[in-house]
Image (cartoon, rainbow, N blue to C red; front, side):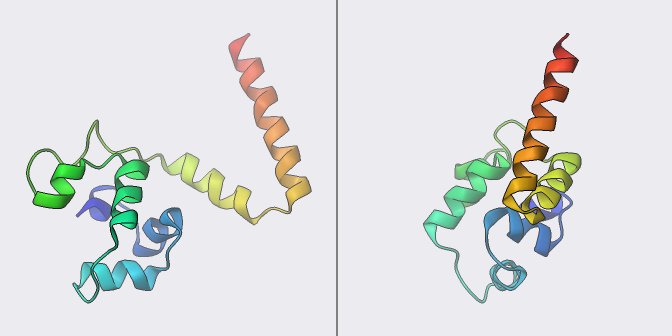
Length: 102
């Protein structure tokens, strides 16, 4: 339900958590139970209410979904870059942020 609320594919949802699409699929179909550490990571990363995830009670999200497609896309591209290009990209982002603050 969280993944669907965030409008993410199983692959996208899993990538951000550091697990494969197959892991997400197996969890969704009840073939495996997620470990507590993964559930905590889901709560932390996506702003999910831990009580809702555990019991189904309360709102799904603590303060609304923390999903930003542009940021997700930027991070996906950033991760594919070689380290020296990551350094360059990060420096450019810093400069843009400084320009924006002026």
